[in-house]
Length: 304
Ligand SMILES: Nc1nc2c(ncn2[C@@H]2O[C@H](COP(=O)(O)OP(=O)(O)O)[C@@H](O)[C@H]2O)c(=O)[nH]1
Ligand SMILES: [Mg+2]
Image (tube, rainbow, N blue to C red):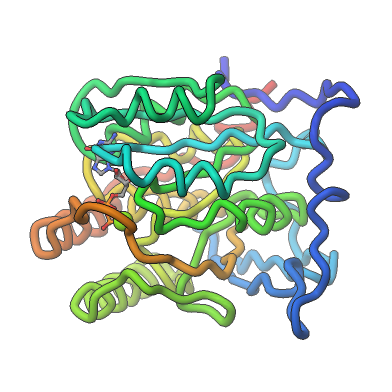
């Protein structure tokens, strides 16, 4: 039985993302047309392409059984000593999200208290081990929404971009993958070394898994909760985004890259260690080659 079956029963009070978040075109690129097109070659070798902005999909999303037009959006925020950053992060979240699930890694500052003060309905979840992957696993399991957004708590992820991700999913994507390296995206946070490492690792994944990702190691993504059996996080650290990106590609899900601008971490320092975590990413890339893909059929069989 799938935990996160899609529930189309909504009352009128719930958010209508499609209507409420249609942004006026800025320049010549409105929120929808700014979505880039990404082809993912499924395990069977056929290209799955979503033409965002045209409303025309060449292939139907595989998991689109009864997806609600007014989805409940869960935002999962992993935190490790982010008390000073949370006010900035929460201030940018849309007011009509369904829930915030904050996964705290035993912060020694008052992260949890600050979160409760800022947003009394916040759901605080603990994690069984250590690391961002371990935290996201716990957060995903706790989500009750139709769509799950993963968002960092250091001020680098701009919550006002959430509607873009939701629109990509409503337009037919299974997985909306943030990218700093497509037109309309960027980063004020990434170092030169990390940019080079990310480019190398992205290229390696594209080669081995026949994907066309422009940004492998980026923490801002969104997906239909019904994709969770495919994603099935079982890693602990910063390799988690790589693991997810590979698994959705291997399952042949429709992935749309969404341009995103990564802001600078506001307070504190990154927990990522470039070489240690780069090596973990590399190990994940190789390790996933041997893993049987969990296909969409497994998801269909358990959904609903
Ligand atoms: N719960 C939890 N969150 C973590 C852990 N490590 C990092 N995070 C959070 O994951 C997000 C990204 O981490 P960050 O240190 O900014 O790494 P970077 O963005 O890759 O440089 C931030 O919101 C962190 O607070 C952890 O072990 N547990
Ligand atoms: Mg960060």
